[in-house]
Image (cartoon, rainbow, N blue to C red; front, top):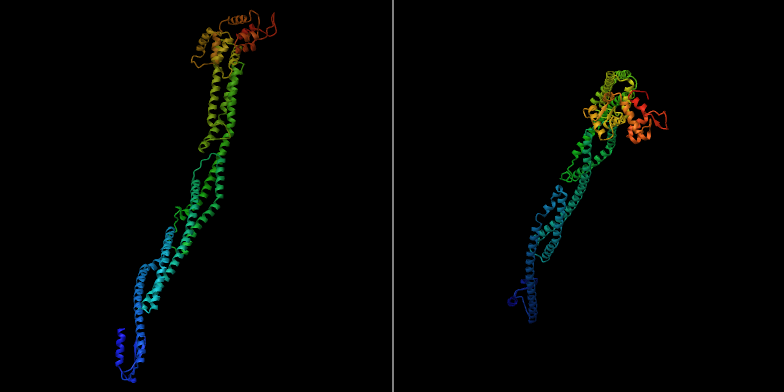
Length: 573
């Protein structure tokens, strides 16, 4: 107001010609001013001018206040713009370089997933800064609207922030897409690795087992065993096409992994984290299996040929052994039977035994030939022969036993001849001795055991079946069996019989014994013999005693007198 009144006072003093009038500008208003000389004012004009002047002053004050407020607002907004812009620029610094990184190309699946989580956190942070960028743009717009004197720099800075923001958004989206794509690729690779591991491990074990089996040493002893191995090997070869298909499928899995890595330029290793089995290992082992298969074929065929040769040796040996073994057994039985059943002169027995010995010696070449076949079998390492129950050891033992038996039997007959001639024993007595001996030789061992010999002595009346008889039997056993073996040979039996029956009244003693058993009857009944004698002795007497036909005979009467006389060579039964 003071300025306005001062202006009015100056205006009144001025009077200027119209030609000297000029326009004065006060703020937004223009006032025509003339020199004091040209002005003619009325009071009404002055009042109106004053009023207009006051209005102009009031308008000027309002404008000035508004301008002050505008300048203050501009200063506040400019400072706010600078602060927010600086904060944002600090936050955004280096973000583009980070988003432009391709670290995921050499990362593992776990690392890529961690990058995705980190990127999600960055996206959340980016979204949170959206408001700040919008605020910065709004402030810049307001500064422009308020006609900020440095609006150009504000606009330039705001434009850079907006451009950077758009770039961050684009890069963020691209990195997310790249990470998600990489994650899917790595998941695919991971699944392929897992499938490779699941299939490679059992296949590798199969190949290792196959190599072990193909190189395994086999020991067989028959054609059936080697044919069984060949059959098993053929079955194994039949599985090779399927195994090869599995091998190719496993290798294709690894090829797919490498293809994915190359197609997308991934800087990661193709090694499998789930398996220690490598493609190179599978290839090398498969080649080894293919090499071993024909080698196994060859070794099995060679063994088959060897087993066929061994089988021929077995059959050749068995064909001879099955003849020689029974022949030896038959000769043994013939010799044993001859020593028991021969009843003719000892000289005839000797001739017959000599003929046996001659035949046995002439059979020796068959044993020698069998020995040669056995030598071939041993050299071929053949240890069993299902075609025969005879072994070379059995044949040898049987042959030696046959030679020993014929020699012993001949020696026994020679000894019997010497004994007969030395003691004047007749052939009939020798036959009776043999008959008595054979009767009590229950097991046909050509020896009398102690109980058999005792039964024989009791039947002959040499010993009784009491304590005294036991003592007498012990004495006799010490004579016939001085070595205490518990057996009595036929030669010892003859020696005893010739020695013990040398007295002439022995037959009479036996007759007297039977007479006592028969209660003084001239005959004896079978029931009496069974009642008074042991079963073996009674059976022997019943079988040998002839029927009694003398005075007072009854059915079943037996002549013990004739039996006793015949037993000692005094008469014929």
